[in-house]
Length: 52
Picture 1: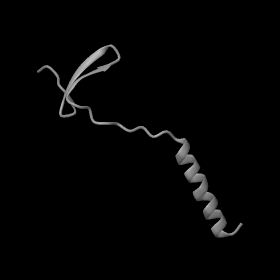
Picture 2: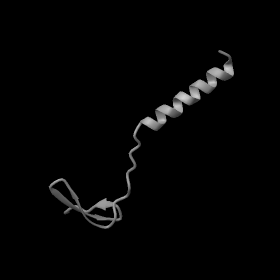
Picture 3: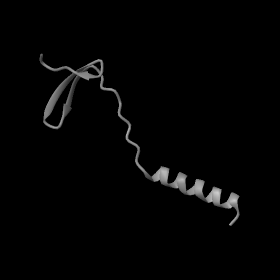
């Protein structure tokens, strides 16, 4: 195999692996109440508000 064929094979395999691996995207929480399991949280500016 020549250098260019090896490089092409490497790129092809890398792209195939990248397509298989799930990508998780975390969206910013909006203002308001959000339920997480059995618990509820209130968010302001993407941050959970806690009692002080």
